[in-house]
Length: 325
Image 1: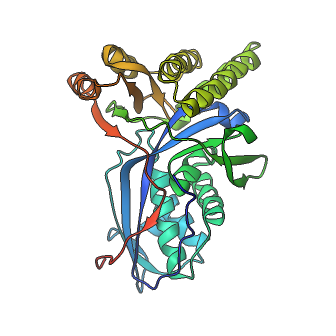
Image 2: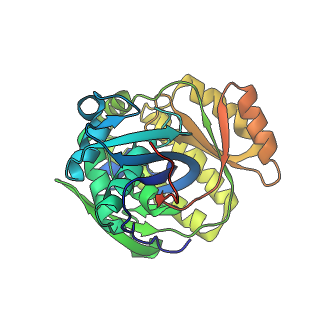
């Protein structure tokens, strides 16, 4: 996938669409400096923005104060008064980046209407908006939906071409473009809304134990090995490392009985699988056995999940000829 182009200037009304994301390796540990590999996938949020006398989101005049993502996006763009209509195929609270996609689409559309913006600046802005709304997290989600394709954080110079560096109040993260092995993946939503707060508390408690630093080291080792396996197209090793990553997430206390049931259901048709995102609910990601993609989707559906066959896609883009809001 080529380097992403800047978001060009475009007069209002503007429309933008941004993809979901799927974390393959490194969730939770990335906040503590470990590497992460994230994939932008072909589920999208799309919105249209028009100037208005009063800011609204899908007709709701309370959204500029009640919705922290909408409020933060407007503030970062200079607090314009706009009417926004948004639709999404990304399940909410599923660990697939619905908030990051909304923030990226909104920020891109607003920036286009105010002169355009470069991708590095857009990625920084989106991270600040999402972090401000959530209070926790890394820029992996927002950088991935801005850049598209496979993206690494904190993986070092050997992990691909550098895209940008995101700066936070207490840390910074180097974002790079990772090679695409050309694989299809399957993500499956469990139907159990994930609880980021519960997951963050569980991980913090677990890493606070005497052996916590060793567990964090194992997360980092698996993430680095996983990044290398995907980059080299080693399907078998990637599958093995997905399973090992799940073992560590289970030990960190962020799995869930429904996720474990889906992982078991996927087993015969998957090279490897794990939860994706914060955990304590949400979704899993599975790498299919070649030629058994349809079987994997059917297995997950029969187990009660909502499965999505997915592939890597470009990052946030403007949409031509937007409809009126």
